[in-house]
Length: 253
Image (spheres, one colour):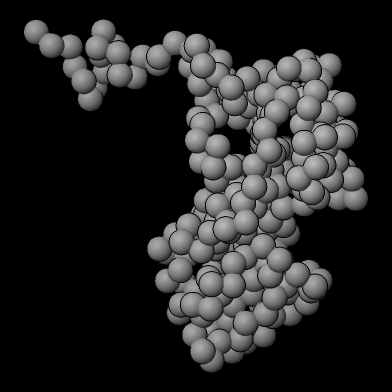
């Protein structure tokens, strides 16, 4: 018996990986985060599968499902939104499985920040502008941020910030970032990236709060901030420069 942690992607049902979909299609037990995982993906489970939405469940209740499935010799598809390595509370589930001696695998998924960048049609790492992407969040009711990981500290790199789980905290995000990045720093808020009701609001730290408020964004949105969002006059990379030689394009004689 194996528990398969599966990243369902950012919301569009066709952005799940082939491997992840095949695991769901063959799983006799499917546990999924109902508020975020598309129903079209869960509908691929076998007709006789035990399918449970874990949104209202506790960790103990989820563990009990793992234990029951193990006793019955049934594999479990544990489906999370985005990628399981980011903000999915998978580490605590894996720790319990380790204690129980139950095997598990992890199938990655398309993360929300990648879907948001795709929706905007931008590259988050632009030559000479930004070569670092920081994935972070802020804390309101959630677990406090560890010392040294506060948003202002993350912003000082000058790279691109992908701020998760913080739409309701946008006013504080703006207050924190403006002294570090400047009021004219480009910002985008992408609501439900890749999904049919996707919406995008762009602006600067000076304007984004009012624009997002007018759009009615409260949750399920990702905040991107940094100069790469509006980069225009950047230099081209050396990757395709004819004067740059490497193993795949050796110097011509």
